[in-house]
Image 1 (cartoon, helix red, strand yellow):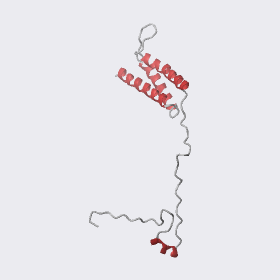
Image 2 (cartoon, one colour):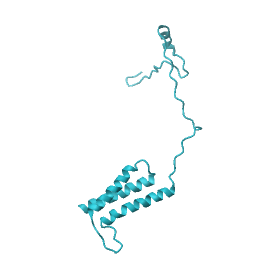
Image 3 (cartoon, one colour):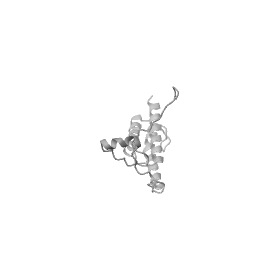
Image 4 (cartoon, helix red, strand yellow):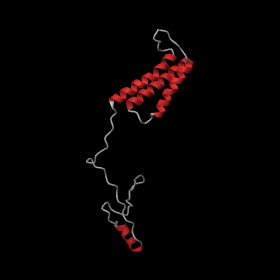
Length: 137
C-alpha cells in the first residue's frame, strides 16, 4: 500500500449470518461472547401506511369565510375598505385590536388547520400587519 491508501478492516465480532468470526473464537474460551443484537425488522411495502386525513372542503370553506369576516374590520379601520355609504375611516387602534384577534386565532389553531387554511390565515395576518406598519409609519 502507498502512503495515501486507506485500509478498511471489519472489526465486528459476528458475520452477517450471526456466526462468531474466526479471530474472536479464542475469546469464547476465556469469556462468554456477547449475544448478537437482533436487527430491527425492515418495513416492507405490504404493510399498510396510515391514511392521510383529508380536510373536509365544506369545513375549509367555512373557515375561510370566518377568516374573511374577522379580517374585514381590520381592513376597514386601516382605511383600505370603504363603509357602505362610501366613506372611509381610519382608526389604527381598532385595526390593531382586530389584527391581534387574528394572531390569537393563529396561535390557538396551530397544528389543527389544513395547509390551505393555515396558509390563508398566515397570509392575511402578515398582510394586515404590514399594512398597519405602513399606516403607523
